Amino acid sequence: MRAQRWERAGSGDAGRAPIFTAVRPLYKLVFLKLLGWELRDERPAQLDRFIIVVAPHTSNWDFVVGLAVRSIARLTDVKFLAKDSLFGPLTGWFFRALGGFPVNRSTHNNMVDAVVDLFKRGAIKKIAITPEGTRKYQPNWKTGFHRIATGAGVPIILCTFDFKEKLVIITAPFPLTADPEADIERMKDWFRPHKGKNPDNGVR
Image (cartoon, rainbow, N blue to C red):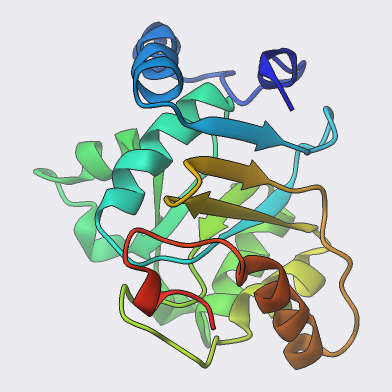
């Protein structure tokens, strides 16, 4: 999809600091024009609650690309989860500015319960998750993100940073079943053709 899809209605900029809007033209110039990346955004325009599953995660450069995509695709309200101890007086502002959301694991049996509760209370509407959990090759993905989606009643969309093709794809909602393992294998099938910065560590 081309630029008209990026300027979608109901964007994620509501309530964000002006800097996130101000830097968007710069990201477009550098990331799309000068570096030659392409963004295909297949999300329905009014999709306002979801989990975005990002893979393969093979390099710290994924973070840099992610910041650009977050701005260009108007995903600045997408959160990522981190333990609440990171959000102290000195560092909390930094992690919050990047979309971090503190989770107190001590009040829940596990992270899945914590995030489902956040969705149900409306504390968060969108989160990004890297199911591999490491930049190294990880053949076994945990099923927590799938259980969060089904428990909170939110769809999963997929996102890949294909460094070989200089292509970012954000999909429409991925169809889920009652079988997390089978669904994850179908997700891996979709991710496999797309190569991360370090292809040997990608999805196989």
